[in-house]
Amino acid sequence: MDKLTIQSEANRCLECKNRPCVSACPAHNNIPEFMNKIKKGLWEEARSIWHETSNLPELCGALCQNESLCEGACTLNKIHKPIRIGFVEKSVADIFKEIIDYPKQTIPKKHLVIGLGPAGLANALKMAEYGFTVEAIDANEQLGGTVYNLVPDFRFDKSVLNDIRRKFDLLNIKIHFNTYVGRDVLLKDLIHKYDSVFIADGLGLPSSVDIQIDHVHVFYAQDLLNTNIYSMSDLKTLLGDRIYIIGLGNVAIDMARTLRRLDKEVHIVYRRTINDAPAGKFEIQHAIEEGVVIHELLGPVALRLQDKIKILNCEETCLVKSPDGSRDLVQSIPNSDVSFEIDDLVFATGQKTSDVLFHGSDVIQTPEISPFATNYPHIFVGGDRINKNKRIVDAMVTGIEVAERIVKGLYEIYR
Image (cartoon, rainbow, N blue to C red):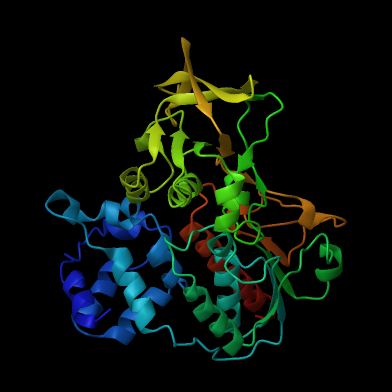
């Protein structure tokens, strides 16, 4: 992307004094100052400002749900379109993709990162920048975690992960791929070999909703989207023509759009409304434009086999105010049954943590002390294990914050 196009977008920034975009950003990136430097052509300074709070702009700029975060808070929404902050972030990241943040000093300490999704990537890069000797372990053959495994190619250019891998190589971060902690190596054997450990293994197990299933095989989007398990040609033959997906998060939308590219008839069943969905609004819009049918306020009840035909039984729902003022509650509407003939059912209703990593160890999380803490002072957790929103930017923030805590604790010890 040429710099004039980027500057043209940055020039629209009003540099508001109350900075609503900064408050809406989980990383609290200094967006107005970043835009100011770009306006003036001070590209290196702009990049430095961003790097103070975010070290994965190539991921966040491309995959953040900006419309509900920084861009959603932009003052220009009131009179015009908001500034395309994600576009500017990603474009500047691309300009400086060859830049490496080498350490200014060497700290004679060894640090281990378990899991190289966004949290682990951010933590490993930051710890190497501080001067630690960093090693990382990941169960996959490539870094990126769910970005590598689950995000479809049509939504994200995964060659960006090669740029991050190059940074790892130049910072001498040693990676042990295809290694599953809890199976191939044990946590109890690792924790005493390093001065600090960051656990960011993500959410390893799919979750489902509690519906009655009568001897019918169902699928999970987390598995179907994983290109290490299924190719597009595999999905073409594995699944029937009429697919129903339960859930309306980003994984559900990615699954639906992937299946539409295989000319499947795709329906999404969601017990809330589109406005309540965790998926990005633009992603939902793209899915609808591509032919995905979304059934709002409809909850699945049972999947039955009748005369060799799969029937998905649902019931209509409504939203009622929660007594404590939190998110509206879902309530079933009596005698509102709706049924669909389907070929296959796919659950995309979130993921949950696996405790396999902790197998054979006495490490436990201690959230009463800190969301990052464990019963070992040198072992920390982050990423989706502690994030409620399960967003890339939130995961990155935990990785950076843990790195800062480790370094601060180290200086306090030697002070």
